[in-house]
Image 1 (cartoon, rainbow, N blue to C red):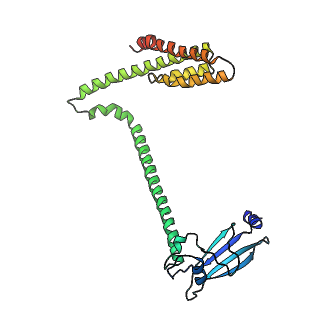
Image 2 (image 1 turned 90 degrees about the vertical axis):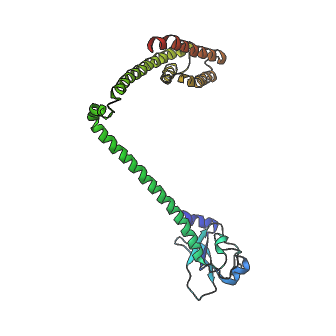
Image 3 (image 1 turned 120 degrees about the vertical axis):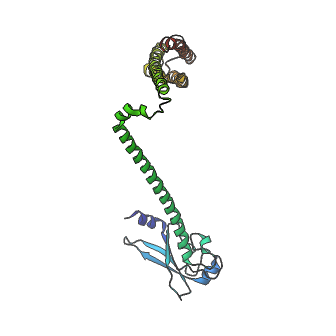
Length: 276
């Protein structure tokens, strides 16, 4: 049995069928207005599993033209019950049932909403196409640049103005040497700093001492970035304290001492000996 039919069996599933919502009288919805313009009939429509759905049908009294129909199914009932009992509204949105309009107004409103959604989808499709196109173009340029890189590496000097070529080449060569030396030295400093932190944290008994110490050293590739590791370090101390393995005050003090000592080693020994 389908879920909808099981719900129907429990709740008395109600179906409202609206035929030709013609409100040409220019009045908003209301019981008197609906009674004047529609006939109401109630049915119990059997389903394949034997469940009968209560159905209220509202058909326009004006039969001089053909109308479309709108069906609404709900598990919440369709009061008031009875052929002679009329509700004060039968549309999903009262604003759609006002003044000299029929079901076309509902259809137009739905169409506008779908059109707005379609426009959004169109915009998304266009933006996606533009992004994908840019990615493809960048990849193609990158491929061609990599293919011709040896030629560019050999001939790029010819693109420099002859008047400034020698000065630019000297500056570029010197800058390349300095940059290589800086990054090489900074990497060595970061490695020594990470080893120092790992040793210090191991001595004071900090959990995850070695990996955390090496991580702090990795942060030091950007100078003084290791300061960002202070809150996680004290968080590890707190976790160790809550586990009953250490004293909170003394362990926090030991961790602070490790940071201070390693910082002194970095500024007083590693950087002066390696970076100069």
